[in-house]
Length: 541
Ligand code: NA7
Image 1 (cartoon, rainbow, N blue to C red):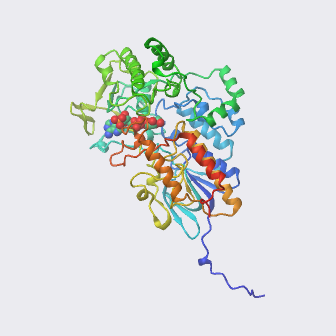
Image 2 (image 1 turned 45 degrees about the horizontal axis):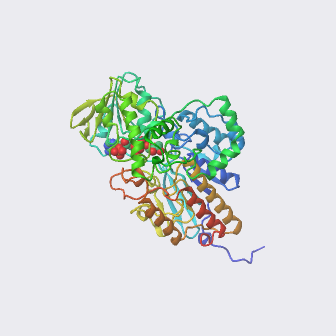
Image 3 (image 1 turned 60 degrees about the horizontal axis):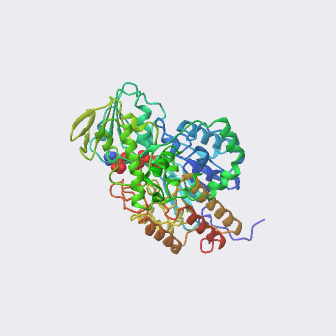
């Protein structure tokens, strides 16, 4: 029988998505976001450039790359069973264990079939008629998705110095953030490490006993203090398990996502003798306690900060035998936490070894890399291996390189040409149904804690849109402006100086803009709660 209905012209129908959700990046945030999407019954795919899962903990596999947040505070807290099953070996676990953990999580929650490895997303184009994104990748993959969640990381695009001849070097050359999966043989090699940020100062003591010679190229020294790592004892293991709920509560409500509590005294409440005794305790404390549990005014009062710095400088002078080298290792351009402070194990001690030398690039700048080594104003030094520990294009690096095109073909990197403009550090106006948990303007401390908060917010928004039949989620321009103004205004007063990569100043030509969230997690929680409390009014259509 003939139909009386007019024939529908297929070409006039908006295209249907292949999946509900595409997540980009299999780091700790992307894996969690994928887990939540699958758990809620969305069809989901995760696309990852690397040959394995782990994100930061896949790429940064240089010797002794490790957490400087306590393992159990960095790990997932969404599943008590998972927390009980995985026994971290160390208070600050190293890359191999972290990579094993993330693989375990992927298998434990049946996520692997949703993950496509070795595939780099090169374009993401929004279609206004259907409210969907078409995601293109290096291998020809093309996938239409309703929601695009770019969990591409804030420290994921390596930064190399713009020094002539870098490609000419005929020895081995590796960036710490792009470290090969096959182990590097350092034994008996002449090695250069360029950069003394958190990565360089972890790598240097890790290889120093193997190499024939080690030359460290330092542009700016950092305030390094001991990590004070140790294995987790069976007693501690039992305590962690017994206290899971209370630990999770503390972490979920803490300002920066750590367990360290604040001190109750200001610096000059104490005599010098009392201060030095307190600093000694702090020096021997775990990781970020040096920042969080220090005197209450250490970050805000210049004189208080200078006292703590003087204590660290004394420590450096007492460890490093050559006074000239010790002096070069003491920062002069910033106080404690003016830049992201690294935590070390045996770093300063390395400079007492006869085969280790320090080249101060402020005295003798790097002129070129040759086929055989590095040439500075003091001459050529020849190497077998150069390790570039020269950092990342922080915050916006990956998002600006992903070929993101929003409404009207607007290029994200053009929209953000003067610095990012975001709402909650996770969405931006003109790019509907695009989210970037763990992105610029969101970060405030222990990364997985706040990026997990953001992933939960995104997840709840997706559920609400599904429940109420909305197809588009977009930050209103006014909300974005308010958040971005808050970041720019209070970022200018931040403890971190403009020399910190948190302002993007390490990448030549990048706009100097604060890239963290100066309101911290309390501000993130408050504004998220307001949006949810108002039923996402203005966000959904
Ligand atoms: P960082 O902390 O950005 O450190 C990079 C280091 O490389 C730092 O010492 C830089 O000196 C140095 N650098 C950067 N560019 C150059 C050039 N052109 N020439 C010489 N030296 C240079 O990166 P990391 O990988 O160590 O740590 C990143 C994060 O990973 C860390 O904060 C943790 O969250 C984990 P500068 O200080 O700029 O003078």
